[in-house]
Amino acid sequence: QVHLVESGGGLVEAGGSLRLSCAASGTMFNVNLMGWYRQTPGRPRDLVATITPGGNTTNYADSVKGRFTVSRDKAKNTLYLQMNSLKPEDTAVYYCYAQTLTYGSVRKTYWGQGTQVTVSS
Image 1 (cartoon, rainbow, N blue to C red):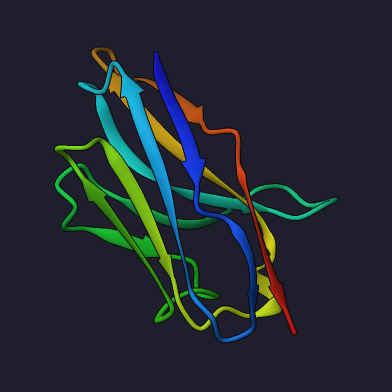
Image 2: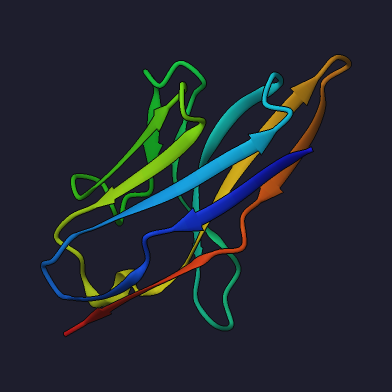
C-alpha cells in the first residue's frame, strides 16, 4: 500500500505562485510513476503532470506547460508541484498520485486526499 498526503494549497491572486507537496509512505519499491491531477466540480480529474522514478522525464498538460514544474525528492519520498503564473482557470482540487507496476504487469494507482487551490482574478 502507498499512502499519499498533499499539502500547500491555498488562495492566491492571479500571477502568484504556490508549491504543493505530496508526502508518500508505505511500499514504494514498485512505484514507476508519480504525478498530479486536478479536478473541478462536475468534471473528471485531469492530468496535470507526471514524473518518472528517476526524475529525468516529465510530462505536462498543455495548459500548464511553462508555468508548472513537477519534481521528486527521493530521499524524502516527497513529490512537489511548483506552480507559477497562476491563472483563475487553475482553480481546482489537486491530487497527488502514485502508480505501481508489480511482477506480471499488475498496475495500481494510489491517490492523496487532495488540496484546494484557488486563484482569484
